[in-house]
Amino acid sequence: MMASRHTVLMRLVASAYAIAQKAGTIVRGVIAEGDLGIVEKTCPTDLQTKADRLAQMSICSSLARKFPKLTIIGEEDLPFEEVDQELIEDGQWEEILKQPCPSQYSTIKEEDLVVWVDPLDGTKEYTEGLLDNVTVLIGIAYEGRAIAGVINQPYYNYQSNEKQKLREHKNEAKAGPDATLGRTIWGVLGLGAFGFQLIEGKASAYVFASPGCKKWDTCAPEVILHAVGGKLTDIHGNALRYNKEVKHMNSAGVLATLRNYDYYASRVPESVKNALVP
Image 1 (cartoon, rainbow, N blue to C red):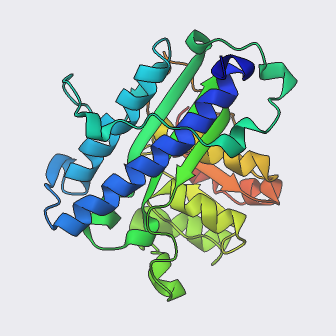
Image 2: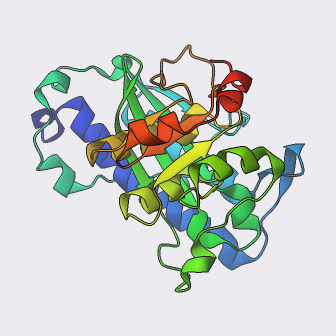
């Protein structure tokens, strides 16, 4: 009876919050055990760890048990198998249920929603001990638009030295955009962690000038950034779509800012835009 008093969306967000916390605990637990169980997926920089696998199993199974009609899309390609009960999170965050549901979403049904899951955003950083760059991402989409999301940062403020929190990638692919946009750009692999840097005013813009970013990387950060007045699009300024049928890769890159979006969009070189096809 209690659940029926709340809309599907608010129950889903409240559950996703608790489930993301559980996943964060799993991520910390794998580090504490000392065996990351690293598997190379497509290349030496595309890694999967035991934490990726367990966290995704926990998130997807927990969501599916409570919301069986959801479409859930996770980053990791895992075989279907029974999940240990200890990985299941049945709780929900009651404070979220106290909030009103936006009227335009009050009649949404489970089957109308798509959930994009990145169980461990920043896996490479995780394996290198750059733990402040690690996040758990659960994004919720309706009619192709990101409308709600949860970002859990398992190691928030783990490092007190600001230089250890952000890592700038200085390679040839980034040189063009960095030169044009100035030193306000920090190329961080984990968009979830970088979303925090934008919101906290520690960075001005995020430019991912390559087609490597996926929908599970952007869904949750996009909606949370939008909620505080920011904007996230592809490199051409087009809105990203999150339908269940859409291709997973953001082939036209990503541009995200907290403010002054038009300025940063205008500074992206035409050569970069021409190299990224929507």
